[in-house]
Length: 197
Image (cartoon, rainbow, N blue to C red):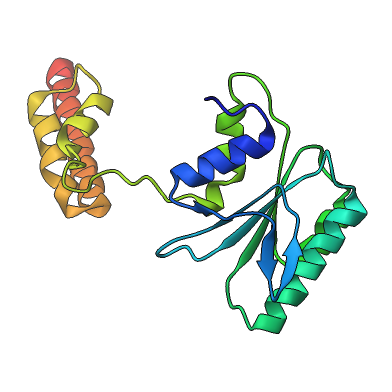
């Protein structure tokens, strides 16, 4: 089933990233909290994530819920970082700022259309694991990459001299380029002298 509401999209993306959905109402220090969804990170991401549907809750009610949750977590001595994901119409900046004093705030809005999931993922990026390329497969072929950027009519000797210095760093490449330019200028001045004679 494809998620259709902003809350469903947020939950689906976070569950796919390894977060575990909690049963509702969320209870902290014997106090029940009514959020649209609540998730908790596993392993290296111990975040508590509460999802608030701003279409159903006013700015004042949203701020009250987060303030109360913060106090309840303080009472229990929780050291778990909290993130409030605001799905639906964006609250006032003043409300977001006030919630931001208690926890991290991610207002994902109500994206629609074919890019909706991508847009929500971008907002949730700080909560999602990084997709790094496999280091064993990501071996750079610097010679071929550099050769692509060199002029195609470049003399083989010149191209080889430049590519041979690449592993030695930028300074070595500059030195060889300088030497090649000086040689070329000296060769041209010799040709001009011969023609004049």
